[in-house]
Length: 256
Ligand code: BTN
Image (cartoon, rainbow, N blue to C red; front, side):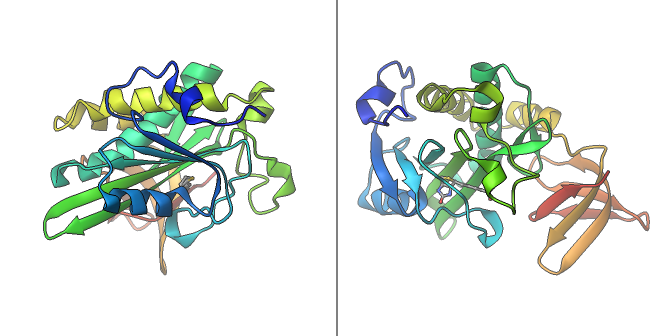
């Protein structure tokens, strides 16, 4: 396994902001916590925290996230305008999908709101945590986990729903993929505050639209047809009773 190092990542990185400062750690509980600490210390926008492995990686909806050595686990620190916050989910999932496609040649799709899938199975998850002060965003932390080297069969809970690039490509592409991911992320991020093209690209990659879905948000479950998304990222579902329901967060399962 090629070891991660700041020098290795910076060599060949073509970005201006994202990843110009990189902190690499062999092991961390979670890159999210280290990123928060660094952001509070005042590091510059675009600073990236990368861990070789995470011992307490976390996912959306208070789930845990498996991050063994060889996977990609990183957090990007941003200092965005508050109006840009809805687009960050779209930028992160689009950057992950585009870079995975460019590096592996395999088609990547997005399951609302921001899971990246290959062949219908999850290869990448995204977690965004914001620190707000009044109506200003002090910083946003974009956590991205990509299964580059996960033995999915060894984990019952994800064996049928997750996939690792090591099994689809036969090689570990971690460093190449990190560089490509940061470059795609920057290209999209620099187009803000204009968000419409980002929204349109994200929407066109969504595998969810036009499908029968089950969405779960706390105790609320909606079964229906995923009809559309709006520019804030919300999903609109025509429920089985014919009503149009708006979903702003939660988990979606594709039915059938
Ligand atoms: C999800 O799909 O539930 C989101 C998973 C996000 C995982 C990444 S790995 C890097 C960063 N550090 C964490 O602890 N979580 C995110």
